[in-house]
Image 1 (cartoon, rainbow, N blue to C red):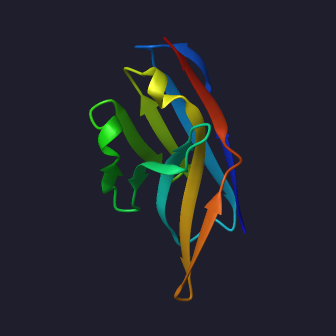
Image 2: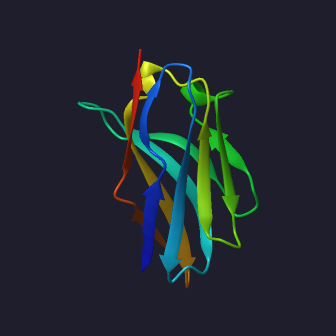
Length: 119
């Protein structure tokens, strides 16, 4: 089992910045991709950004150029630097980790951290 603890969410004005962190603990071996998803009220959860163990990244079109995902493998932590925030970025942000053990893939989710961007 992998436990994820997110932090860094909060209330910010449009144009502001926030940095989310997600620390993984427990059986933290063979972790492949780490990522961030978000869910706005009344909407489905959507991908924000992912990063593989090799450092390859992928971003939603809506956040490209504004958000940066990074990871510290020594600390088993993934970060999401969010710049130029917009009201439409308001959502609960969830950390996700994928682990591959003996050929099987496991996916773990954090409890989420809320981000509110005021106009």
